[in-house]
Amino acid sequence: MGRTRRESVHAMTDNREDELDPLTEAALERIVHLHSGSAVAEDWEAYQDWRASSVEHRTAAERAERLWARLGPALKPPGRGGGTVAILAALTIGLAGAFGAGAFGPPRSYFADQRTSVGERRTVALADGSIVEADASTSFDVDFAPGERRLKLYAGRIHVAVTPDVARPFIVEAGDLEAQALGTAFEVDQAKDATDVVVTERRVRARDVRTGAQVELGAGEETTLRNGSLQAPRAVDVRAATAWRRGMLVFDDRRLDEVAEEISRYVGGRIIFLGDAGSLRLTGAFPSGDAATVLDAVTAALPVRVTRLPFLTVVRTASR
Image 1 (cartoon, rainbow, N blue to C red):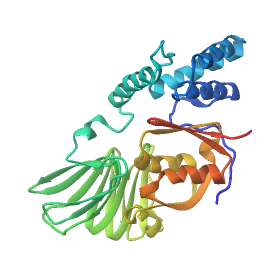
Image 2: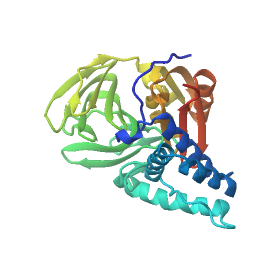
Image 3: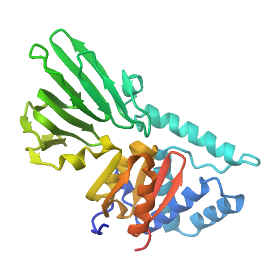
């Protein structure tokens, strides 16, 4: 179902502090347990004892605590009688900061004209007769003017079947990329670090608004804007790329950290990787209505362990 490939350590943040050594991974695993809702006072004492047992353990614990703090909840043991309430309070405070920092999408997307929730797909008929299919966790604004029709995609993925109107070009804006329909149907995917355009009918002109670079795409082609570079058109399996429109998620030898970005639209929260788990490869087709089964399939097919918490899933290699 997949194959492994050893690479440098990967995580879903860009900070090199997240490239974790085994001791830091061990510390983070303890912290995850402490916030799982099943920890007792003895577990907190055991963690403090482990932390104080050597300079190496203390250093690893400090690194793990900094990572955990960036993910949301503060590292504070529940007080007497606090239990789950204290943990939920910490999560609430952490999530408030995460939303403010845009950890769950750009803040402006919260008030977008159209917004789908986790796991929800929606079809929207626009005033000009064009049809937009929005994937889960997607948000966009509709801005129609006398001389132009424009959608501003903030997060997620849409497929647009455009009604021709030579007097009013139809443009999808996503980050630094603009995709202009040339009498066509196409998909735009605004992901964490890249924007993809896939053409399903006719032609599309994709342009990097920062550099002015542009490419024209025909049906069955895609391009990606990544790290300020607009890639040349390449052939794509349109049926697989647009499987989400049929309620399926299809992965063909994809890295787990890429897979995670897609399934998080359906299961919610953040997914982080420890060790080299993010570089493992997955091939398979899964129903998007039960995207959590992807994680089950991952643990069955690959040497990883998955720990699920509210709003957070941690995936780590099962052995070294």
